[in-house]
Image (cartoon, rainbow, N blue to C red; front, side, top):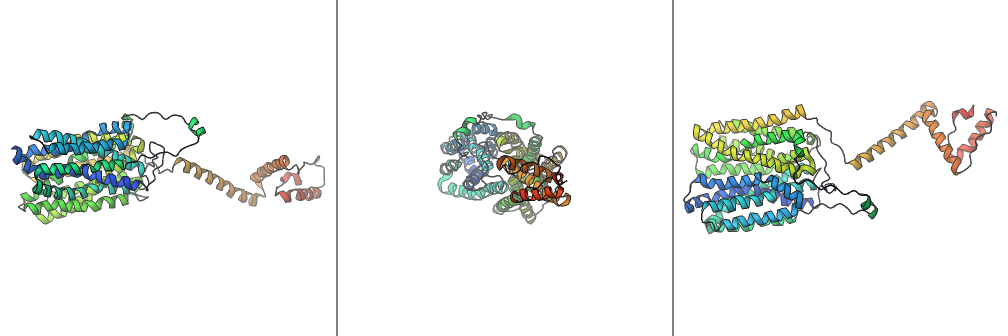
Length: 507
């Protein structure tokens, strides 16, 4: 859990860390933006829906809740489909579902129709795009993976800054039905992003190698063995606790500002400030996480980001005017961006590429329950106390608790492994180190001991090779010769071939 994993992917191909991977990163950037920003952008149409169907705000709020629930809760289904059919086909179908849901919702006659179309169908389509895009990003990037995750995560605030104003313009010009129809067409871009997810293919081998290669076992549709990994269990528990409070402040900060007597436009500006800071925080955190001395300890950086976010909530609960809320949104945007950039990077480092498709599905399923409980629970607390301070205090305590669980359990139960090179590179380095040791030892021993044991062994080996190949060296029939004669003969024989005679032959 503490060390970075260098993955080769399911096909045995090492991550290229570039090339077509940048196209995959762009697709993941767009998909991440749609997945996280779309549930919030739909809220622009809530007033029109309330007027159209005669329902309350809480009824329309279920649209965003169902969208998020489908995005998180359908994680295992996405894992099974990806392991069975691959990422690209799943994303293409998901793009069609996402678009179809919004198009059908534009013809809705009641709010339940919108629940089923926008919430279930579009939510499922976004889920079928979001998870496979992260899996492909993990396969294409290894050394540059923290930076890639940070850049991809930046799609969320960028899309939020674009989709929300776009939704307002569409509502003003075409109404909510025309807006839904146009947004459905925009979601067809998910299919284009899915087409970018070209699978990595291993280089072709000779026929002999193909015959000798044993067939690989079929991958499991959903690998539950990840629960045997302590690091994965710790991460899952910490992430579930974190999600309880992570999304609460962005939901209530605008209402908090209105409660303090600020105008609606001025209050909504707080989310714009938060999103603008978030755009730059995520790539910056990705760059920091990719540093050599930081990456093996990325889990602790993630813990720091959560503590930073939680303390920001605790201090922000004491805000009494608009400037203090602006400062709160700046620091919350920084910490929120750090968490967004690191959450999937840490999971990738824990489980690796082979099990990531199953691991992310199971983690998102657990987080789905927390997403459904967190904001509504904070809303009930607000109804009971009528004080926003307690809402922010609760959110901050939950996020800080998750950081402590992750950091302390990692220190106590997980042994940090040093970063290891790829197997071929590791073997080659070992061979080179061995050869260098032998070369360094031989001259030193020859110089210090006049040949020594290594010199004797080399002399015997070289003498045997000379006997078999050149037939130029013959052993003396007796050792009863004069020492001067032996030295002279040995010089005449060994000098052309560079053979060192054993010390015993000169006695």
